[in-house]
Image (cartoon, rainbow, N blue to C red):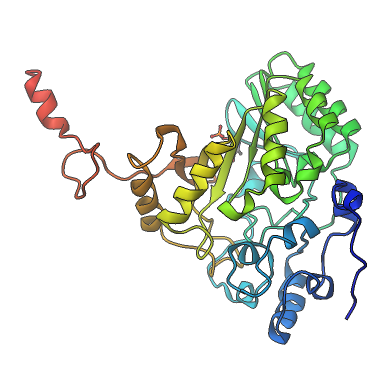
Length: 359
Ligand SMILES: *Cc1c(COP(=O)(O)O)cnc(C)c1O
């Protein structure tokens, strides 16, 4: 088996080294976790269906001996991906919501702008698997330009969500070009980025990048921690650099079976996010997406988690639980008004309030 020479400190802290040395086959992964022969075979079979890659940094956080480690479940291909009868490859019908190939336009005033299909690591539950990682390349300058021109021609768009893939895998130079073009459009009030780099490749959040972003404010960023073990010192420092540069950082979590489908894990996750000044924003119900049957759980489970957070933790630590659909996000919430079973302190008898007012 191939044993790599250990990287130097400086290499490990260099995001380009992390990307160049991404793990895409079982052999190098075995430098970080212990794989059974069966797992090796699974990786070869399932990893070939939907592209996979993991940064050495993230692989080093996995439990080497526990195949059900929540970080492994998110990133290491499983043969169970090949036996999902129900899932669709594009459950949000994004392709039919794309007026030009890089822009998903569902809401009147805001768009998702997919500037690349490359990511530092490929999540096994990626709802853009129809696109992400297929052919690994940033969108060409022409495709990105086509997206910018579309936004420029649509005065109703006031909020542009730069996504992908992972937009922070652009070079600083390309990010600067993209940001300054978007900023030159008068009706674009808000630029936000969706990026997993703060915890799969925290080395990417360099002081130079933060300085660059701070020149194009207001810029907001949403990242995607799913489990408290992902909040390492490095990830915390990356988020700190962003917030000090004036970039508010929010977090979107996907509810995944075996990863974070319990009140205990979600409570610890939101507490640790608040401690690093990252605001919990959404919990997404996992899409009926091909290859994810073993990771999906029920809406009842999600509601139970929200019920376990509401009143039991800081109000702004409770994210909104949503089901994304081709028509937009649908919030899912436990029933807090009269008639609800349960012991939530917020349960209110709306009828008695209105009758007391004499209405
Ligand atoms: C989620 C999403 C947005 C942003 O929605 P917010 O609720 O404002 O965060 C915009 N466009 C598309 C297509 C989306 O899926």
